[in-house]
Amino acid sequence: MLKFCARLEGYAGVAALVVMFICIAIQVFFRYVLDNALEWPEEIARYAFICAVFLGASLAAQEGRHLEISVCKHCFGPRVHYALTVISTVFTLLFCVVMAIWGVRMVLFVAESEQVAASVAMPMYSIYLVVPLGMACMFLRSLNHTLTVLRKSRGPKNGAADPGKSHEENALSEMSKSW
Image (tube, rainbow, N blue to C red; front, side, top):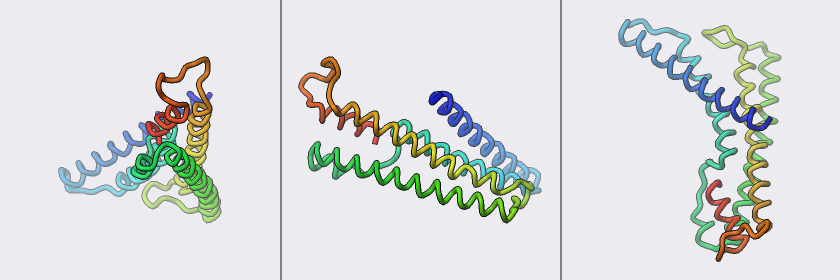
């Protein structure tokens, strides 16, 4: 089920990027070739970009590809590296929770106000839905990734650790690849 959701997210993110590209190409063609700018492609491209960003953030969390400043982690040794990784993960999870709650509140507010997109007559709450959805998925993926890495840091199973490396170093190398 988790792989299906990841594929669905990936396909939706790619679809959003394709829609964005097509809308921008249409807008450029109409504006510069036909000298007749359309209203809707710019708005649809903007919404597709927002969708791609929030879905992409969730996918990046799944693969541990979010940006970080890692100078402090590498300067102070493995224990500080491990502690900073855990602290940054806690802040990421907290951020996801706050953004998901805020996103739900925004969706409810926009749905109650019955706002409609300017040029495409689409309900705005459907566009805002991607914020809590993306943040909830990012929370779950970050939590799953962190728990997986922490389980690996407990020690080798059946002597599977790299020779010459401690359990902590193995976990840190895994975390540094992903966080």
